[in-house]
Length: 289
Image (cartoon, rainbow, N blue to C red):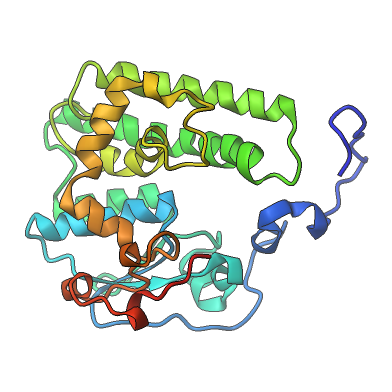
């Protein structure tokens, strides 16, 4: 890879997998399946195919919150190992033609749902939960949900990529995306200095969507960048993150489809609530990839 001062873009860009860095195996410039592989189907109408990245955690937390609130939202969660290319299997592509986790099949309605924000909205409307009925509060929740969907790529694909994952460190993109990450944290901090939750008084899908990204960041769990971004100054975000991420349903949801960290915090697949209480090594494994 050439340096930032010497690289001259060619007239026509061509893909070179060697320049993909850590994620070369999961990115390519075309869509569609690379192999035939049917997806497993469990016993519940809701079938989730995912991995415990921040976008995946959004959905498992939502499902666990629904169950905790008494809704009939039982689900099977199947592990998609993106490093192995599971997302390019024909069955997964049928559910999400964009080949990104998470993806949801609702066999009760025959609906496929992809994009994490769309899944949260679908489940909120399906079960009538975690989306305020008051029109003003509902609009505010939607404002912040879509703010997150548009902002998080700057945090992950922008700051996180160039700071933590790029094969070489370049000052310009790190500075550019660090500035944007801190601006976004300041946006949240100012909002959460006014209200308890993002939409106001209600805990909603906006909070569920945002905590795995920005809550994790201010708690020091993202990209090992807490000191670099001086996250301790965002006191209101920290207060909110501590409240949201200490919820039992959040903590259960964060375990599902998790393949890294302490083994006791991993639940590779989830098919019943009892799975959390009856973890054995054959279920949770010790994979830290």
